[in-house]
Image 1 (cartoon, rainbow, N blue to C red):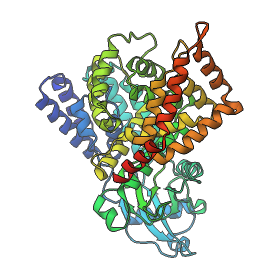
Image 2: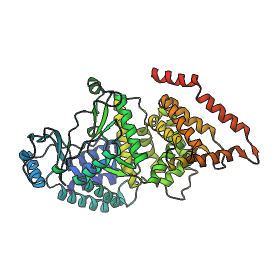
Image 3: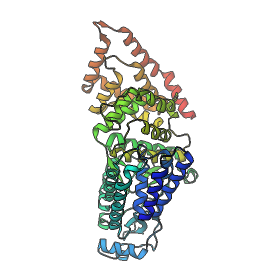
Image 4: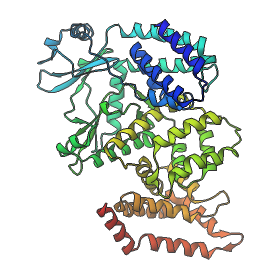
Length: 518
């Protein structure tokens, strides 16, 4: 192990500074093959680094994203021994049927499909034997190598590589605690208990422990192939949309999210509101949380991105910790506009998050960007979600779904925090009403979203205007219309014209027809 790591580190130090793209691609491939051959801890480390465009060069990132978290199954007898040691009885007594081989094997454990004594099918995940001591040894070696070679490696961080290793180790040890994973699954299920598009397996607590986890079996197909889904009468578009909306809810509503939504952890099941399918989540070992401030700032960032307000977006990066307070944003704003503005084009449907991530990996080496540790898993989750969506829907745009979702939440403003955000969007710093932003929000809900959403959104907005919760909005609106000691009738007329234009029967019918023809 030390010989392989030492050789890899020496090669990266000597050749890592080369500007030859062929050399960098070759180094990326060597990095991929070396980490794959070293086992579970190194595979996980490579996957972790694949979410850090601020640290790792683009050519290396492209290789690290190919790391697959699968290994050959370990000895079945050892799995049975673990079950008996953890649950206090042999598998043949605990289950009506227990197979002699797993249905899937990964770097940390393997999964069996078994039948309970009451006839229900379950998934039994058994941890690899002696995993914890091996991970501790591997992490010690990785940390030693980071201390010795970190300052010399061509990474965008100086000598702080040991801190990255420590953060990774904490995440990894949370992932191998199956009792914690059971808690995560139950919390996730509670958040989505009223969502008919999402299914979460139920934990069988009596048959679970720190190294064995038993949950109900999800009878579905993996979200990997469009043709397979269609053969099972499942609609890929419905499932992609359900996945993106559930991901947005995790990030922007709950602040608690599944950080590893790759195809092996997502299943398509029959049913759903329209009968076109439901989305099933499994594997809750890698979860993370967002603070309320981060959730609200992300909402701001989506709106600023679509409005092409790159100066405000720069301030969002500071608030989120991607840039240090006091960073001079003047030279950065044109760079953001170059990287993000051109990608947006004339419509949100032109936006591709993976392309933006690739271009940002270059920008992060030119400007003082750093990905905060708490956002590394978010980037991984979003990139995984979009990659899966693009596999099923090649023309898919994650922002085309995200922005209508954010617009609807802002316009409905059903929480105090969203009411404050709506005020920030609709009024500038001088208190003037920004009708073009209101029209942009309505346009996105009616066109890029579902036109049927306009009516309930309008109803929620009207309720807000006349209700007690809308006091702040009414006050700001009055101050905007009465400025400089006079009544601005032109603003009133423009607002009335916007409402008539946006909610005219002809316009609503046109939106409906456009949606039906897609």
